[in-house]
Length: 203
Image 1 (cartoon, helix red, strand yellow):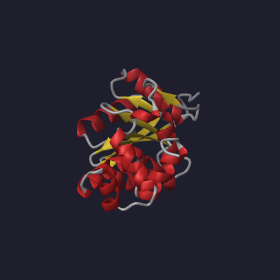
Image 2 (spheres, rainbow, N blue to C red; image 1 turned 90 degrees about the horizontal axis):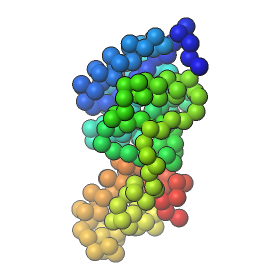
Image 3 (tube, rainbow, N blue to C red; image 1 turned 90 degrees about the vertical axis):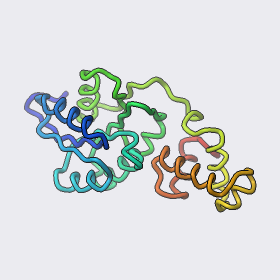
Image 4 (cartoon, helix red, strand yellow; image 1 turned 60 degrees about the vertical axis):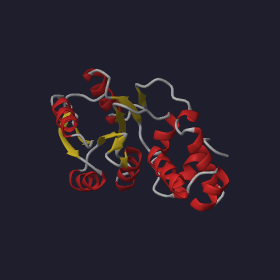
């Protein structure tokens, strides 16, 4: 357990300034928090992580147009010892998805302040995973149409080829692909397919 003499540096990544300030104030009020830094996007998060060396990060599931899962993965690539908690006020993600991104837990913004603090403290102390959401089924991560597009991507089909097979426009396929990347925290087709196969979305 973290004692009052053991402090941690925390990074909060959220595109909403009120959330960033509120989370920072909440965490700085804890005796075990040495300092709390904030960032509004991927580049700022990476810059802050390099300069400040946080022990734990609290990352929103959707940070503007960026996936929090991508931010999580990039932060851990930068510092493999960093612990990450994914948080969201409107979305959710399956355990296997956030774990594949390297996160140690998920906490809803709708949780009480005490629950949020304890979740961050739990992860910061490397006491295992934490998840305040109800169980999420893998097949609820993507819509049926998004899964169709993902399966086409897995075959190596181009957007045009996938559009022809699925009877939709290439533009619609491209839009679905962008959403798939965001939901899975993938940067490209190879990452999306590899992650989807690891977590059992596609064979």
